[in-house]
Length: 630
Image (cartoon, rainbow, N blue to C red; front, top):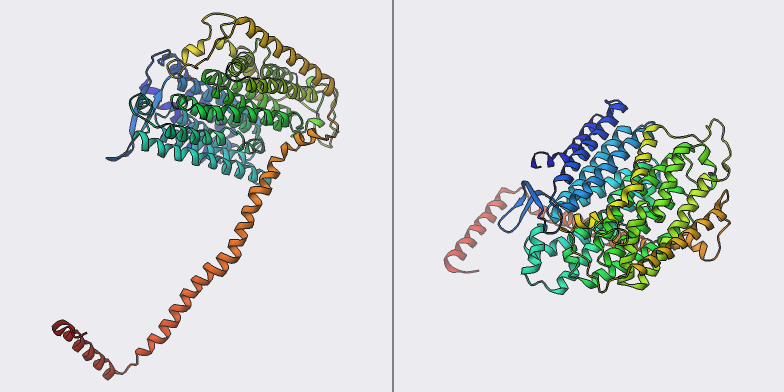
Protein backbone atom coordinates (compact mmCIF):
# COMPACT_ATOMS: atom_id res chain seq x y z
CA UNK A 1 0.00 0.00 0.00
CA UNK A 2 2.88 2.35 0.75
CA UNK A 3 3.83 2.32 -2.94
CA UNK A 4 0.66 4.08 -4.06
CA UNK A 5 -0.79 5.75 -0.94
CA UNK A 6 1.11 8.97 -1.68
CA UNK A 7 -0.38 9.17 -5.17
CA UNK A 8 -3.92 9.64 -3.83
CA UNK A 9 -3.38 13.29 -2.79
CA UNK A 10 -0.43 13.90 -5.13
CA UNK A 11 -2.37 13.34 -8.38
CA UNK A 12 -5.00 16.06 -7.73
CA UNK A 13 -2.16 18.41 -6.78
CA UNK A 14 -0.47 17.67 -10.11
CA UNK A 15 -3.79 18.30 -11.85
CA UNK A 16 -3.95 21.68 -10.13
CA UNK A 17 -0.50 22.68 -11.39
CA UNK A 18 -1.03 21.39 -14.94
CA UNK A 19 -4.47 22.96 -15.42
CA UNK A 20 -3.54 26.08 -13.50
CA UNK A 21 -0.38 26.80 -15.46
CA UNK A 22 -1.79 25.62 -18.78
CA UNK A 23 -5.28 27.07 -18.45
CA UNK A 24 -4.78 29.39 -21.43
CA UNK A 25 -2.83 26.93 -23.57
CA UNK A 26 -4.68 23.62 -23.12
CA UNK A 27 -7.97 22.84 -24.84
CA UNK A 28 -11.10 22.55 -22.71
CA UNK A 29 -11.39 18.86 -23.54
CA UNK A 30 -7.83 18.20 -22.37
CA UNK A 31 -8.35 20.28 -19.23
CA UNK A 32 -11.47 18.29 -18.30
CA UNK A 33 -9.73 14.98 -19.04
CA UNK A 34 -6.74 15.90 -16.84
CA UNK A 35 -8.88 17.37 -14.07
CA UNK A 36 -11.30 14.45 -13.96
CA UNK A 37 -8.69 11.80 -14.73
CA UNK A 38 -6.40 12.52 -11.78
CA UNK A 39 -9.37 12.34 -9.39
CA UNK A 40 -10.58 9.12 -11.00
CA UNK A 41 -7.16 7.49 -10.56
CA UNK A 42 -7.17 8.65 -6.93
CA UNK A 43 -10.60 7.02 -6.60
CA UNK A 44 -9.29 3.71 -7.97
CA UNK A 45 -6.37 3.85 -5.54
CA UNK A 46 -8.81 4.66 -2.72
CA UNK A 47 -10.72 1.48 -3.58
CA UNK A 48 -7.47 -0.48 -3.19
CA UNK A 49 -6.93 1.16 0.19
CA UNK A 50 -10.50 0.36 1.22
CA UNK A 51 -10.07 -3.30 0.27
CA UNK A 52 -6.79 -3.67 2.18
CA UNK A 53 -7.29 -1.45 5.22
CA UNK A 54 -7.38 -3.12 8.67
CA UNK A 55 -10.94 -2.96 9.97
CA UNK A 56 -13.04 -4.31 12.79
CA UNK A 57 -12.53 -4.27 16.52
CA UNK A 58 -8.89 -4.11 17.59
CA UNK A 59 -7.61 -3.07 14.15
CA UNK A 60 -4.50 -0.88 14.30
CA UNK A 61 -4.05 2.06 11.93
CA UNK A 62 -1.26 2.07 9.37
CA UNK A 63 1.14 5.04 9.58
CA UNK A 64 3.16 6.16 6.55
CA UNK A 65 5.92 8.74 7.20
CA UNK A 66 7.38 10.93 4.46
CA UNK A 67 9.45 13.67 6.13
CA UNK A 68 9.47 15.92 9.17
CA UNK A 69 7.58 19.19 9.08
CA UNK A 70 9.18 20.22 12.39
CA UNK A 71 11.86 18.31 14.26
CA UNK A 72 13.29 20.07 17.30
CA UNK A 73 14.18 18.80 20.72
CA UNK A 74 10.88 20.05 22.11
CA UNK A 75 8.52 19.27 19.22
CA UNK A 76 8.30 16.71 16.44
CA UNK A 77 5.62 16.93 13.73
CA UNK A 78 5.96 14.51 10.79
CA UNK A 79 4.28 14.75 7.41
CA UNK A 80 2.64 11.35 7.61
CA UNK A 81 -0.61 9.61 6.76
CA UNK A 82 -2.77 7.50 9.05
CA UNK A 83 -4.83 4.96 7.15
CA UNK A 84 -7.67 3.22 8.96
CA UNK A 85 -11.31 2.35 8.34
CA UNK A 86 -12.58 5.91 8.89
CA UNK A 87 -9.98 7.40 6.55
CA UNK A 88 -10.64 4.83 3.81
CA UNK A 89 -14.40 5.50 3.90
CA UNK A 90 -13.92 9.26 3.54
CA UNK A 91 -11.37 8.67 0.76
CA UNK A 92 -14.06 6.88 -1.24
CA UNK A 93 -16.61 9.66 -0.62
CA UNK A 94 -14.22 12.49 -1.49
CA UNK A 95 -12.70 10.97 -4.62
CA UNK A 96 -15.84 9.15 -5.83
CA UNK A 97 -18.27 12.06 -5.49
CA UNK A 98 -15.47 14.43 -6.50
CA UNK A 99 -14.93 12.56 -9.77
CA UNK A 100 -18.64 12.65 -10.67
CA UNK A 101 -18.74 16.39 -9.97
CA UNK A 102 -15.65 16.94 -12.14
CA UNK A 103 -17.35 15.10 -15.01
CA UNK A 104 -20.54 17.12 -14.48
CA UNK A 105 -18.51 20.35 -14.46
CA UNK A 106 -17.12 19.56 -17.90
CA UNK A 107 -20.62 20.12 -19.29
CA UNK A 108 -21.91 22.74 -16.86
CA UNK A 109 -18.91 25.08 -17.08
CA UNK A 110 -17.97 24.47 -20.73
CA UNK A 111 -18.99 27.95 -21.92
CA UNK A 112 -17.27 29.73 -19.03
CA UNK A 113 -14.11 31.69 -19.80
CA UNK A 114 -12.46 30.51 -16.59
CA UNK A 115 -12.88 26.81 -17.43
CA UNK A 116 -9.23 25.87 -16.81
CA UNK A 117 -8.98 27.91 -13.64
CA UNK A 118 -12.17 26.30 -12.33
CA UNK A 119 -10.82 22.78 -12.79
CA UNK A 120 -7.52 23.81 -11.18
CA UNK A 121 -9.40 25.06 -8.11
CA UNK A 122 -11.48 21.86 -7.94
CA UNK A 123 -8.31 19.73 -8.05
CA UNK A 124 -6.69 21.84 -5.33
CA UNK A 125 -9.77 21.47 -3.14
CA UNK A 126 -9.68 17.67 -3.52
CA UNK A 127 -5.98 17.70 -2.57
CA UNK A 128 -6.55 19.65 0.66
CA UNK A 129 -9.60 17.58 1.57
CA UNK A 130 -7.52 14.41 1.18
CA UNK A 131 -4.77 15.87 3.38
CA UNK A 132 -7.42 16.67 6.00
CA UNK A 133 -8.67 13.09 6.26
CA UNK A 134 -5.37 11.28 5.65
CA UNK A 135 -3.11 13.19 8.05
CA UNK A 136 -1.85 11.35 11.13
CA UNK A 137 -1.79 14.39 13.41
CA UNK A 138 -3.72 17.53 14.26
CA UNK A 139 -1.22 19.75 12.45
CA UNK A 140 -1.80 17.99 9.12
CA UNK A 141 -5.55 18.12 9.68
CA UNK A 142 -5.15 21.85 10.25
CA UNK A 143 -3.27 22.20 6.95
CA UNK A 144 -6.15 20.52 5.13
CA UNK A 145 -8.69 22.43 7.24
CA UNK A 146 -7.23 25.79 6.18
CA UNK A 147 -6.68 24.62 2.61
CA UNK A 148 -10.32 23.73 1.99
CA UNK A 149 -11.27 27.08 3.53
CA UNK A 150 -9.02 28.85 1.04
CA UNK A 151 -10.42 26.83 -1.88
CA UNK A 152 -14.00 27.52 -0.78
CA UNK A 153 -13.20 31.25 -0.90
CA UNK A 154 -11.78 30.91 -4.42
CA UNK A 155 -14.68 28.79 -5.68
CA UNK A 156 -17.55 30.69 -4.02
CA UNK A 157 -16.17 33.95 -5.43
CA UNK A 158 -15.27 32.36 -8.77
CA UNK A 159 -17.45 34.85 -10.67
CA UNK A 160 -15.66 37.69 -8.93
CA UNK A 161 -16.98 40.45 -11.21
CA UNK A 162 -20.24 40.24 -9.27
CA UNK A 163 -19.73 42.16 -6.01
CA UNK A 164 -22.43 40.14 -4.22
CA UNK A 165 -20.58 36.92 -5.00
CA UNK A 166 -17.34 38.39 -3.69
CA UNK A 167 -19.18 39.43 -0.53
CA UNK A 168 -20.47 35.87 -0.10
CA UNK A 169 -16.93 34.50 -0.50
CA UNK A 170 -15.57 36.95 2.10
CA UNK A 171 -18.40 36.08 4.47
CA UNK A 172 -17.59 32.37 4.20
CA UNK A 173 -13.89 33.02 4.69
CA UNK A 174 -14.33 35.25 7.76
CA UNK A 175 -16.90 33.05 9.51
CA UNK A 176 -14.70 30.01 8.95
CA UNK A 177 -11.76 31.89 10.47
CA UNK A 178 -13.76 32.28 13.69
CA UNK A 179 -14.00 28.52 13.94
CA UNK A 180 -10.38 28.08 12.89
CA UNK A 181 -9.22 30.08 15.91
CA UNK A 182 -10.86 27.39 18.02
CA UNK A 183 -8.96 24.66 16.17
CA UNK A 184 -5.65 26.50 16.59
CA UNK A 185 -6.16 27.05 20.34
CA UNK A 186 -7.26 23.44 20.78
CA UNK A 187 -4.11 22.26 19.00
CA UNK A 188 -1.89 24.32 21.30
CA UNK A 189 -3.75 23.03 24.34
CA UNK A 190 -3.44 19.42 23.16
CA UNK A 191 0.31 19.83 22.76
CA UNK A 192 0.57 21.41 26.21
CA UNK A 193 -1.30 18.52 27.85
CA UNK A 194 0.06 15.58 25.84
CA UNK A 195 3.39 16.79 24.42
CA UNK A 196 2.44 15.53 20.95
CA UNK A 197 -0.04 16.11 18.14
CA UNK A 198 -0.06 12.53 16.79
CA UNK A 199 -3.52 10.99 17.03
CA UNK A 200 -2.32 7.59 18.19
CA UNK A 201 -0.11 9.06 20.91
CA UNK A 202 -2.76 11.50 22.16
CA UNK A 203 -5.49 8.86 22.36
CA UNK A 204 -3.14 6.32 23.97
CA UNK A 205 -2.19 8.90 26.62
CA UNK A 206 -5.84 9.23 27.67
CA UNK A 207 -5.59 5.90 29.46
CA UNK A 208 -2.15 6.43 30.98
CA UNK A 209 -2.00 10.17 31.74
CA UNK A 210 -4.13 12.01 34.27
CA UNK A 211 -5.83 14.80 32.31
CA UNK A 212 -8.13 17.16 34.16
CA UNK A 213 -11.81 17.37 33.26
CA UNK A 214 -11.30 21.11 32.70
CA UNK A 215 -8.63 20.47 30.04
CA UNK A 216 -10.69 17.81 28.26
CA UNK A 217 -13.74 20.05 28.34
CA UNK A 218 -11.82 23.07 27.07
CA UNK A 219 -10.13 21.16 24.24
CA UNK A 220 -13.35 19.52 23.06
CA UNK A 221 -15.31 22.79 23.19
CA UNK A 222 -12.65 24.52 21.10
CA UNK A 223 -12.69 21.66 18.59
CA UNK A 224 -16.47 21.91 18.44
CA UNK A 225 -16.16 25.65 17.79
CA UNK A 226 -13.99 24.76 14.80
CA UNK A 227 -16.59 22.26 13.63
CA UNK A 228 -19.33 24.87 14.12
CA UNK A 229 -17.61 27.17 11.62
CA UNK A 230 -16.72 24.56 9.03
CA UNK A 231 -20.01 22.65 9.25
CA UNK A 232 -22.21 25.77 9.50
CA UNK A 233 -23.91 25.33 12.87
CA UNK A 234 -25.60 27.99 15.00
CA UNK A 235 -24.41 30.73 15.31
CA UNK A 236 -21.93 30.40 12.40
CA UNK A 237 -24.35 29.01 9.81
CA UNK A 238 -25.29 32.02 7.68
CA UNK A 239 -22.27 31.73 5.38
CA UNK A 240 -23.32 28.46 3.77
CA UNK A 241 -26.62 29.57 2.14
CA UNK A 242 -24.86 32.69 0.80
CA UNK A 243 -22.15 30.42 -0.59
CA UNK A 244 -24.65 29.33 -3.25
CA UNK A 245 -23.23 32.29 -5.18
CA UNK A 246 -20.60 29.89 -6.52
CA UNK A 247 -21.20 27.66 -9.56
CA UNK A 248 -23.56 24.73 -8.85
CA UNK A 249 -20.80 22.05 -9.00
CA UNK A 250 -19.11 23.97 -6.17
CA UNK A 251 -22.30 23.78 -4.14
CA UNK A 252 -22.44 20.03 -4.69
CA UNK A 253 -18.78 19.36 -3.93
CA UNK A 254 -18.10 21.70 -1.03
CA UNK A 255 -21.50 22.19 0.56
CA UNK A 256 -23.03 18.74 0.21
CA UNK A 257 -20.45 16.00 0.14
CA UNK A 258 -17.09 17.08 1.53
CA UNK A 259 -16.03 20.34 3.17
CA UNK A 260 -19.04 20.87 5.42
CA UNK A 261 -18.74 17.31 6.68
CA UNK A 262 -15.17 17.98 7.85
CA UNK A 263 -16.52 18.87 11.29
CA UNK A 264 -18.22 15.47 11.54
CA UNK A 265 -14.99 13.75 10.50
CA UNK A 266 -12.89 15.70 13.00
CA UNK A 267 -15.16 14.94 15.98
CA UNK A 268 -15.46 11.29 14.96
CA UNK A 269 -11.67 11.06 14.64
CA UNK A 270 -11.40 12.51 18.17
CA UNK A 271 -14.28 10.45 19.58
CA UNK A 272 -12.11 9.15 22.44
CA UNK A 273 -11.58 12.73 23.60
CA UNK A 274 -15.26 13.62 23.30
CA UNK A 275 -16.35 10.50 25.19
CA UNK A 276 -14.57 11.94 28.23
CA UNK A 277 -16.46 15.24 27.91
CA UNK A 278 -20.18 14.57 28.54
CA UNK A 279 -21.03 18.26 28.92
CA UNK A 280 -19.47 19.04 25.55
CA UNK A 281 -21.49 16.23 23.95
CA UNK A 282 -24.67 17.67 25.44
CA UNK A 283 -23.83 21.10 24.01
CA UNK A 284 -23.13 19.51 20.62
CA UNK A 285 -26.50 17.74 20.69
CA UNK A 286 -28.49 20.89 21.53
CA UNK A 287 -26.62 23.14 19.09
CA UNK A 288 -27.08 20.53 16.35
CA UNK A 289 -30.81 19.99 16.87
CA UNK A 290 -31.55 23.73 17.16
CA UNK A 291 -29.58 24.34 13.96
CA UNK A 292 -31.59 21.58 12.26
CA UNK A 293 -34.91 23.06 13.37
CA UNK A 294 -34.13 26.71 12.57
CA UNK A 295 -32.79 25.99 9.08
CA UNK A 296 -35.60 23.52 8.27
CA UNK A 297 -38.18 26.21 9.00
CA UNK A 298 -36.26 28.66 6.81
CA UNK A 299 -36.14 26.15 3.92
CA UNK A 300 -39.95 25.82 3.73
CA UNK A 301 -40.25 29.45 2.54
CA UNK A 302 -37.32 29.82 0.14
CA UNK A 303 -37.95 30.12 -3.59
CA UNK A 304 -34.36 29.96 -4.87
CA UNK A 305 -33.86 26.27 -5.69
CA UNK A 306 -30.24 26.32 -4.50
CA UNK A 307 -31.10 28.16 -1.29
CA UNK A 308 -33.62 25.44 -0.37
CA UNK A 309 -30.90 22.81 -0.77
CA UNK A 310 -28.40 24.96 1.12
CA UNK A 311 -30.63 25.28 4.19
CA UNK A 312 -31.43 21.58 3.84
CA UNK A 313 -27.71 20.82 4.05
CA UNK A 314 -27.33 22.86 7.25
CA UNK A 315 -30.38 21.11 8.72
CA UNK A 316 -29.05 17.65 7.89
CA UNK A 317 -25.68 18.55 9.40
CA UNK A 318 -27.54 19.61 12.54
CA UNK A 319 -29.10 16.15 12.78
CA UNK A 320 -25.65 14.59 12.41
CA UNK A 321 -24.29 16.70 15.26
CA UNK A 322 -27.30 15.84 17.40
CA UNK A 323 -26.53 12.15 16.81
CA UNK A 324 -22.89 12.71 17.72
CA UNK A 325 -24.04 14.38 20.92
CA UNK A 326 -25.85 11.13 21.71
CA UNK A 327 -22.62 9.19 21.12
CA UNK A 328 -23.86 7.73 17.82
CA UNK A 329 -20.70 8.42 15.81
CA UNK A 330 -21.29 5.60 13.32
CA UNK A 331 -24.84 6.83 12.65
CA UNK A 332 -23.50 10.32 11.91
CA UNK A 333 -20.79 8.98 9.58
CA UNK A 334 -23.39 6.73 7.95
CA UNK A 335 -25.54 9.79 7.22
CA UNK A 336 -22.48 11.67 5.93
CA UNK A 337 -22.14 8.92 3.32
CA UNK A 338 -25.81 8.68 2.31
CA UNK A 339 -26.18 12.46 2.43
CA UNK A 340 -23.21 12.78 0.06
CA UNK A 341 -25.10 10.63 -2.45
CA UNK A 342 -28.54 12.21 -2.40
CA UNK A 343 -27.53 15.81 -1.65
CA UNK A 344 -24.88 15.83 -4.40
CA UNK A 345 -27.60 14.37 -6.64
CA UNK A 346 -30.04 17.13 -5.65
CA UNK A 347 -27.51 19.92 -6.11
CA UNK A 348 -26.39 18.63 -9.49
CA UNK A 349 -30.04 18.09 -10.42
CA UNK A 350 -30.73 21.70 -9.45
CA UNK A 351 -27.80 22.73 -11.64
CA UNK A 352 -29.31 20.75 -14.51
CA UNK A 353 -32.63 22.55 -13.98
CA UNK A 354 -30.86 25.94 -13.90
CA UNK A 355 -28.96 25.00 -17.08
CA UNK A 356 -32.15 23.87 -18.82
CA UNK A 357 -34.03 26.99 -17.66
CA UNK A 358 -31.38 29.37 -19.08
CA UNK A 359 -29.87 30.23 -15.67
CA UNK A 360 -33.20 30.71 -13.89
CA UNK A 361 -33.07 29.75 -10.19
CA UNK A 362 -36.44 31.04 -8.98
CA UNK A 363 -38.85 28.12 -8.50
CA UNK A 364 -41.84 30.44 -8.90
CA UNK A 365 -40.79 30.75 -12.56
CA UNK A 366 -40.54 26.99 -13.08
CA UNK A 367 -43.15 24.25 -13.29
CA UNK A 368 -43.94 21.43 -15.72
CA UNK A 369 -40.28 20.59 -16.26
CA UNK A 370 -40.80 16.82 -16.11
CA UNK A 371 -41.88 16.82 -19.76
CA UNK A 372 -38.86 18.88 -20.81
CA UNK A 373 -36.21 17.23 -18.59
CA UNK A 374 -37.21 13.58 -17.98
CA UNK A 375 -33.82 12.32 -16.73
CA UNK A 376 -33.34 15.25 -14.38
CA UNK A 377 -36.92 14.81 -13.16
CA UNK A 378 -36.60 11.11 -12.31
CA UNK A 379 -33.21 11.46 -10.63
CA UNK A 380 -34.29 14.45 -8.54
CA UNK A 381 -37.44 12.58 -7.49
CA UNK A 382 -35.20 9.75 -6.27
CA UNK A 383 -33.12 12.29 -4.36
CA UNK A 384 -36.26 13.74 -2.73
CA UNK A 385 -37.46 10.28 -1.71
CA UNK A 386 -34.03 9.43 -0.30
CA UNK A 387 -33.68 12.58 1.80
CA UNK A 388 -37.26 12.14 3.05
CA UNK A 389 -36.18 8.84 4.61
CA UNK A 390 -38.58 6.59 2.71
CA UNK A 391 -37.52 2.91 2.61
CA UNK A 392 -35.67 1.25 1.08
CA UNK A 393 -33.65 4.24 -0.14
CA UNK A 394 -30.42 5.19 1.61
CA UNK A 395 -31.72 8.10 3.68
CA UNK A 396 -34.15 5.85 5.52
CA UNK A 397 -31.47 3.67 7.12
CA UNK A 398 -29.11 6.44 8.23
CA UNK A 399 -31.83 8.85 9.41
CA UNK A 400 -33.61 6.09 11.33
CA UNK A 401 -30.38 5.22 13.12
CA UNK A 402 -29.76 8.85 14.09
CA UNK A 403 -33.32 9.35 15.35
CA UNK A 404 -33.13 6.12 17.33
CA UNK A 405 -30.00 7.34 19.11
CA UNK A 406 -31.83 10.58 19.98
CA UNK A 407 -34.87 8.65 21.28
CA UNK A 408 -32.65 6.60 23.56
CA UNK A 409 -30.59 9.60 24.69
CA UNK A 410 -32.99 12.53 25.04
CA UNK A 411 -36.72 12.45 24.25
CA UNK A 412 -36.97 16.23 23.70
CA UNK A 413 -34.15 16.18 21.17
CA UNK A 414 -35.82 13.20 19.51
CA UNK A 415 -39.14 15.07 19.25
CA UNK A 416 -37.40 18.02 17.58
CA UNK A 417 -35.53 15.62 15.26
CA UNK A 418 -38.85 14.00 14.37
CA UNK A 419 -40.33 17.41 13.47
CA UNK A 420 -37.22 18.30 11.43
CA UNK A 421 -37.52 15.04 9.47
CA UNK A 422 -41.16 15.80 8.60
CA UNK A 423 -40.28 19.39 7.63
CA UNK A 424 -37.48 18.01 5.44
CA UNK A 425 -39.99 15.91 3.52
CA UNK A 426 -42.35 18.88 3.15
CA UNK A 427 -39.83 21.39 1.78
CA UNK A 428 -38.16 18.87 -0.51
CA UNK A 429 -41.44 17.85 -2.11
CA UNK A 430 -42.44 21.51 -2.22
CA UNK A 431 -39.30 21.97 -4.33
CA UNK A 432 -40.22 18.95 -6.45
CA UNK A 433 -43.82 19.99 -7.16
CA UNK A 434 -42.98 23.67 -7.76
CA UNK A 435 -40.26 22.66 -10.22
CA UNK A 436 -41.62 19.68 -12.11
CA UNK A 437 -45.44 19.67 -11.78
CA UNK A 438 -48.11 21.81 -13.41
CA UNK A 439 -47.29 24.14 -16.28
CA UNK A 440 -44.26 26.27 -17.01
CA UNK A 441 -44.75 29.67 -15.37
CA UNK A 442 -41.83 31.57 -16.92
CA UNK A 443 -42.68 33.85 -19.83
CA UNK A 444 -40.52 33.20 -22.88
CA UNK A 445 -37.85 35.84 -23.42
CA UNK A 446 -36.75 36.77 -26.92
CA UNK A 447 -33.87 34.63 -28.25
CA UNK A 448 -34.20 32.30 -25.26
CA UNK A 449 -34.64 28.59 -25.89
CA UNK A 450 -37.36 26.61 -24.15
CA UNK A 451 -36.40 24.35 -21.21
CA UNK A 452 -34.27 21.43 -22.34
CA UNK A 453 -32.52 18.39 -20.95
CA UNK A 454 -28.84 18.74 -20.04
CA UNK A 455 -26.02 17.01 -21.97
CA UNK A 456 -24.91 13.50 -21.05
CA UNK A 457 -21.82 14.78 -19.22
CA UNK A 458 -24.32 16.22 -16.72
CA UNK A 459 -27.04 13.54 -16.72
CA UNK A 460 -24.76 10.48 -16.39
CA UNK A 461 -23.41 11.64 -12.97
CA UNK A 462 -27.06 12.21 -11.96
CA UNK A 463 -27.94 8.62 -12.86
CA UNK A 464 -24.92 7.20 -10.98
CA UNK A 465 -25.75 9.26 -7.88
CA UNK A 466 -29.40 8.21 -8.11
CA UNK A 467 -28.35 4.54 -8.09
CA UNK A 468 -26.10 5.16 -5.09
CA UNK A 469 -28.96 6.96 -3.34
CA UNK A 470 -31.09 3.85 -3.81
CA UNK A 471 -28.61 1.19 -2.71
CA UNK A 472 -26.24 3.14 -0.45
CA UNK A 473 -28.15 2.42 2.74
CA UNK A 474 -27.78 -1.33 2.58
CA UNK A 475 -24.34 -1.18 4.20
CA UNK A 476 -26.10 -0.27 7.47
CA UNK A 477 -29.17 -2.50 7.76
CA UNK A 478 -30.34 -2.35 11.39
CA UNK A 479 -30.81 -5.36 13.67
CA UNK A 480 -34.55 -4.80 13.38
CA UNK A 481 -34.51 -6.16 9.82
CA UNK A 482 -31.53 -8.50 9.81
CA UNK A 483 -29.01 -9.64 12.39
CA UNK A 484 -25.34 -8.78 11.92
CA UNK A 485 -26.09 -6.90 8.68
CA UNK A 486 -24.79 -3.48 9.79
CA UNK A 487 -21.51 -3.74 7.87
CA UNK A 488 -20.53 -0.15 8.52
CA UNK A 489 -20.78 -0.54 12.28
CA UNK A 490 -18.51 -3.57 12.14
CA UNK A 491 -16.13 -1.87 9.70
CA UNK A 492 -15.63 1.21 11.93
CA UNK A 493 -15.55 -0.64 15.26
CA UNK A 494 -11.75 -0.36 15.46
CA UNK A 495 -11.86 3.44 15.18
CA UNK A 496 -15.08 4.59 16.82
CA UNK A 497 -15.87 3.92 20.46
CA UNK A 498 -19.23 2.17 20.79
CA UNK A 499 -22.08 4.34 22.00
CA UNK A 500 -22.88 3.89 25.66
CA UNK A 501 -26.57 3.06 25.93
CA UNK A 502 -28.39 3.45 29.21
CA UNK A 503 -31.04 1.01 28.10
CA UNK A 504 -31.96 -1.02 25.06
CA UNK A 505 -35.11 -0.62 23.01
CA UNK A 506 -37.54 -3.33 21.99
CA UNK A 507 -38.22 -4.10 18.34
CA UNK A 508 -41.91 -3.32 18.81
CA UNK A 509 -41.09 0.21 20.02
CA UNK A 510 -38.72 0.69 17.10
CA UNK A 511 -41.40 -0.43 14.66
CA UNK A 512 -43.82 2.08 16.21
CA UNK A 513 -41.28 4.90 15.85
CA UNK A 514 -40.66 4.04 12.19
CA UNK A 515 -44.38 3.72 11.45
CA UNK A 516 -45.20 7.04 13.12
CA UNK A 517 -42.49 8.85 11.15
CA UNK A 518 -43.49 7.29 7.82
CA UNK A 519 -47.15 8.22 8.37
CA UNK A 520 -46.15 11.84 9.07
CA UNK A 521 -43.83 11.80 6.05
CA UNK A 522 -46.71 10.60 3.84
CA UNK A 523 -48.94 13.39 5.21
CA UNK A 524 -46.18 15.94 4.48
CA UNK A 525 -45.92 14.73 0.86
CA UNK A 526 -49.71 14.92 0.49
CA UNK A 527 -49.80 18.47 1.86
CA UNK A 528 -46.93 19.54 -0.41
CA UNK A 529 -48.74 18.12 -3.45
CA UNK A 530 -51.99 19.90 -2.52
CA UNK A 531 -50.29 23.23 -1.83
CA UNK A 532 -47.67 23.34 -4.60
CA UNK A 533 -48.80 21.13 -7.50
CA UNK A 534 -48.61 23.82 -10.16
CA UNK A 535 -48.94 26.57 -7.54
CA UNK A 536 -46.70 28.96 -5.62
CA UNK A 537 -46.81 30.51 -2.15
CA UNK A 538 -49.01 33.38 -1.22
CA UNK A 539 -47.44 36.40 0.42
CA UNK A 540 -46.18 35.40 3.84
CA UNK A 541 -47.34 36.90 7.12
CA UNK A 542 -46.80 36.26 10.81
CA UNK A 543 -44.37 33.46 11.66
CA UNK A 544 -44.05 32.48 7.98
CA UNK A 545 -42.67 35.96 7.32
CA UNK A 546 -40.01 35.27 9.95
CA UNK A 547 -39.13 32.00 8.21
CA UNK A 548 -39.05 33.69 4.80
CA UNK A 549 -36.66 36.33 6.13
CA UNK A 550 -34.42 33.64 7.65
CA UNK A 551 -35.26 34.52 11.26
CA UNK A 552 -33.64 37.92 10.57
CA UNK A 553 -30.32 36.43 11.70
CA UNK A 554 -28.28 38.40 9.17
CA UNK A 555 -30.07 41.59 10.19
CA UNK A 556 -29.37 40.86 13.86
CA UNK A 557 -25.68 40.26 13.11
CA UNK A 558 -25.61 43.47 11.06
CA UNK A 559 -27.17 45.51 13.89
CA UNK A 560 -25.37 43.92 16.85
CA UNK A 561 -21.93 43.05 15.48
CA UNK A 562 -21.10 44.54 12.09
CA UNK A 563 -22.48 48.07 12.52
CA UNK A 564 -21.00 48.57 16.03
CA UNK A 565 -17.64 47.26 14.78
CA UNK A 566 -17.70 49.64 11.82
CA UNK A 567 -18.77 52.48 14.14
CA UNK A 568 -15.93 51.69 16.55
CA UNK A 569 -13.53 51.62 13.62
CA UNK A 570 -14.70 55.05 12.48
CA UNK A 571 -14.20 56.40 16.02
CA UNK A 572 -10.66 55.03 16.11
CA UNK A 573 -10.02 56.41 12.64
CA UNK A 574 -11.22 59.90 13.59
CA UNK A 575 -9.97 60.30 17.14
CA UNK A 576 -7.17 57.77 17.61
CA UNK A 577 -5.59 57.57 14.17
CA UNK A 578 -5.94 61.16 13.01
CA UNK A 579 -5.78 62.95 16.37
CA UNK A 580 -3.39 60.57 18.07
CA UNK A 581 -1.24 58.38 15.83
CA UNK A 582 -0.95 60.85 12.92
CA UNK A 583 -0.12 63.74 15.26
CA UNK A 584 2.41 61.61 17.12
CA UNK A 585 4.16 60.61 13.88
CA UNK A 586 4.05 64.20 12.57
CA UNK A 587 5.18 65.48 15.98
CA UNK A 588 8.22 63.19 15.89
CA UNK A 589 9.22 64.77 12.58
CA UNK A 590 8.58 68.28 13.89
CA UNK A 591 10.61 67.57 17.04
CA UNK A 592 13.53 66.24 14.99
CA UNK A 593 13.39 69.36 12.82
CA UNK A 594 13.33 71.67 15.87
CA UNK A 595 16.26 69.90 17.57
CA UNK A 596 18.37 69.84 14.41
CA UNK A 597 17.55 73.49 13.77
CA UNK A 598 19.15 74.59 17.04
CA UNK A 599 21.93 72.02 17.19
CA UNK A 600 23.20 73.02 13.77
CA UNK A 601 24.04 76.50 15.13
CA UNK A 602 26.95 74.84 16.99
CA UNK A 603 28.56 74.30 13.60
CA UNK A 604 29.96 77.85 13.16
CA UNK A 605 32.75 77.09 10.68
CA UNK A 606 35.30 78.87 12.97
CA UNK A 607 38.40 76.62 13.24
CA UNK A 608 39.63 78.38 16.35
CA UNK A 609 36.36 77.61 18.12
CA UNK A 610 36.64 73.93 17.12
CA UNK A 611 40.20 73.76 18.54
CA UNK A 612 39.08 75.41 21.79
CA UNK A 613 36.20 72.94 22.19
CA UNK A 614 38.56 70.04 21.47
CA UNK A 615 41.03 71.23 24.14
CA UNK A 616 38.20 71.67 26.67
CA UNK A 617 37.05 68.14 25.90
CA UNK A 618 40.53 66.69 26.36
CA UNK A 619 41.06 68.52 29.64
CA UNK A 620 37.67 67.37 30.92
CA UNK A 621 38.40 63.76 29.93
CA UNK A 622 41.80 63.77 31.64
CA UNK A 623 40.31 65.35 34.75
CA UNK A 624 37.64 62.63 35.00
CA UNK A 625 40.16 59.87 34.38
CA UNK A 626 42.81 60.98 36.88
CA UNK A 627 41.01 62.97 39.53
CA UNK A 628 37.34 62.13 39.21
CA UNK A 629 36.73 65.86 39.05
CA UNK A 630 33.34 65.67 37.45
